[in-house]
Image 1: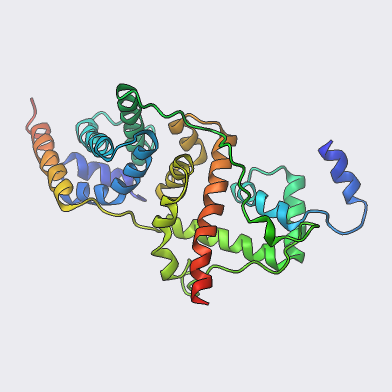
Image 2: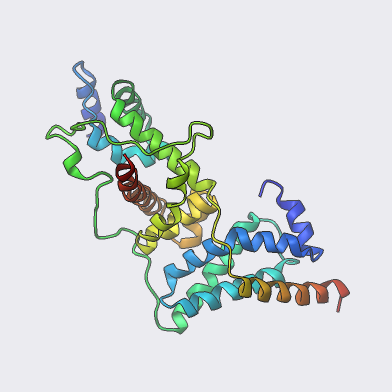
Length: 201
Length: 97
């Protein structure tokens, strides 16, 4: 990721290992984002495969105006949208979801809005500063519990690492909607992970 | 209106930003999209509130960990199909038209 021009050169030279690494890195995220637009696994399989073939065919045309991964995801979104329209199953992106679920359950707060007691913490690995291994293993499953719009945004922002602007452009949503979806997605993942911590305590 | 409220609150007394509001502003805080006044209110609240400091730290860890989370690789069959296509298509590209 850090050396995209080297990766691109290797791909253009036909380096299979480079392509295999690229697939391993992004295939899962492509599937998750494709599922935002498509209802069946078969359609997701088709669109993700078409995307990879599009990437391979388009490598020489790619001009580097965006990052390689942004380009790959833009191919995916275009194909997924086309397929959704063809299947007459277009799912509009519900920019502002109807449910205004709070980040933390209201019962955690006293009437004046302060914590009734300090919220339980997520286990962390003191060496890396990241979440502990047991929680790390649950992260993708926790992401899968989100609504499809939340899932698309958290995948592009936090798993793939696109910027807010790139994510808005890809999904054709406003910056405000993107932030609301990201906020609910992260809060929800924390809520899903928390019982795991409590169960271990 | 917001500025008026901030000024009113600024006239002494405890920081009126409460934990329940804090957790709803955490993403804006991390994204750096808060107006400076709100950011200052959050920083002031953080200095006094262990619960919210812990919550913020957990969210930062969560985001940092998501960035480091490897995706599930595709199954063998899919991988083989794609690699074959890569070999065929890129082979053609290298040989020229």
